[in-house]
Image 1 (tube, rainbow, N blue to C red):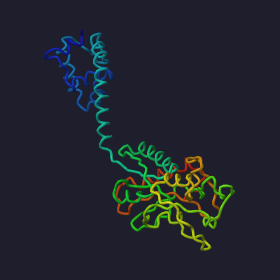
Image 2 (cartoon, helix red, strand yellow; image 1 turned 90 degrees about the vertical axis):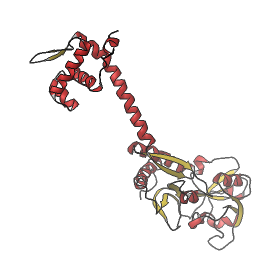
Image 3 (cartoon, rainbow, N blue to C red; image 1 turned 120 degrees about the vertical axis):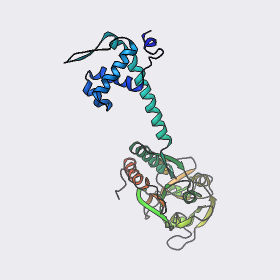
Image 4 (cartoon, rainbow, N blue to C red; image 1 turned 45 degrees about the vertical axis):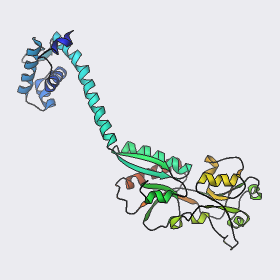
Length: 316
């Protein structure tokens, strides 16, 4: 085979020789080939002559007006070019893989299916726009969400407001939703078209195990109605799914956002709108001490993603 002849002992093409040959075969012009390789035309000529000595025959026909491949040159070009391109592709893949492995990681936490949708949409958009960053999405729970932020397990969170803890930055609201009361399907309130905060005196509100820091979600676990009537404490839970299970078992009720009617429909639970209450806002939050440069641009991307998924949410 010809390929074996030109790769024989003492006839292996060096990288610059191969690039000079392939460049001249493509350009058919010594000047343009020299510019392509960032060398002089004399250097290109030397390299071509060196290759022809190795092969033992001319590869190009040269005149004052033109440069053309000889039949032997055509044959060499057809055999060398695919191998060279494969080498270049393999090198590019290796470089890309190295860069991906070395990419910075932004860890984004979320709680609730609607927030998860925004987190994943924003993560995909951000990674496409910022190739030097990878976004790692993870779900957090009621009992440990802010602890994970403080302990550095996540860099930024999509959570329900209010959060007033010192040292935490509250970003713009991504989306908001009406509040609803999740009650056992057998409860008298389940047959109502709507309820008010005064009706909470007739249920036992599920509580989060342990105190949540910074007043987080304090308006979801009131002790009394606006008129001062006591609200009975229900079972203590650590996760949202545990809260729903408590409702389904008939032992408690919980204030939720309207996303539940899309993501958490299940037997034994009725969702009743609560009138006269502000909407439940979801926003990005992060530590004031966080210096990760991707926080701000990710926030802008998350806002864009939220508008795509929740177009009815008013712009900030």
